[in-house]
Length: 403
Image (cartoon, rainbow, N blue to C red; front, side):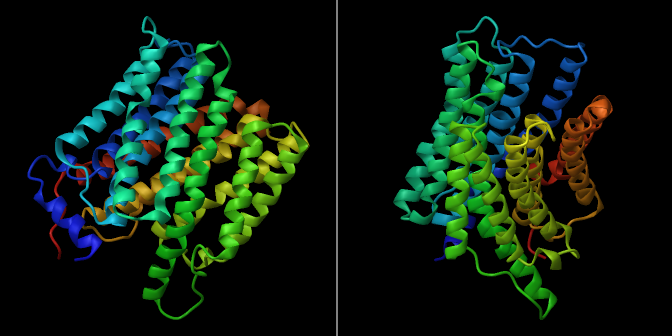
């Protein structure tokens, strides 16, 4: 019996609400809704129309709730769906899945309404989901002897440690939005994209191109060049976490960016223009090397973009677009729909790209910062509210029957 068959049989055994039949369903939907709502709240805070009852300053709350709030949900949904396919073991469904979802919701409430609550209690509540996931998924990978994916759980643990460090920095009165905790968390997620994206982008591209007929195909993933590129990126990110302004860090980021552009050139992305669902994976990944190159330029020649804008090539570009690409593809595939992007899906891809570019432009052209910030926020809300509107019904309803 294959891993896919075992997972599907476990999935079909659930007779409760469809939204609790697979991990991607509640977490993708709630994550998208929170991405849109948190941005709307952030815009209202910027304009002075809202003050949240949180102990975090507004910028720190915004940074935390995107990196550890939104991304925490998407990582949970992806891994709860992927690990059963990797190992062939029982997926988490039903009320245990509801409990994990409730843990994520409790974290959002605890952080947002943290005034009057003990800081330690807020941190513990916020960290509960990642801790539970690390234990659960780590056990599944070890029991299933799926050793090649154990580093992903290691990155998940690192992500949780980064969140704990973020809370500690904020509790000490530091500006956690630019602290080591945020850099460590962002670095962990970028490595997840580099590792997992380095497998799925060329694989999905090969699958689609093979159906189109003869022509150049991607180089098979995870060869020696890929491993060297991953090692270089890891070293550069560790240097950035520890010494974000050091010239050596800038040089390491620049080299890592160039090597990962070369890595991408091996994936035949230029041949995917006919299917946005495949093309968007390449567009999402390209923000990883572009962010590294922009970070290098900003370190070695400060003032060109501003550190915040350069960092948003990673935050809004790589993380925003790559997660949206994976969410749309996984939802279509796991709900029995054709793997192709319709006009609505293309529109939400375009919206998140617009959000990223407008935010970066606000740093490059300070005189136009205000309208560009507004455009970025509105585009971000449109992208993720659009995902919830288009894909929410798929996530809430049972999988379509074959044919």
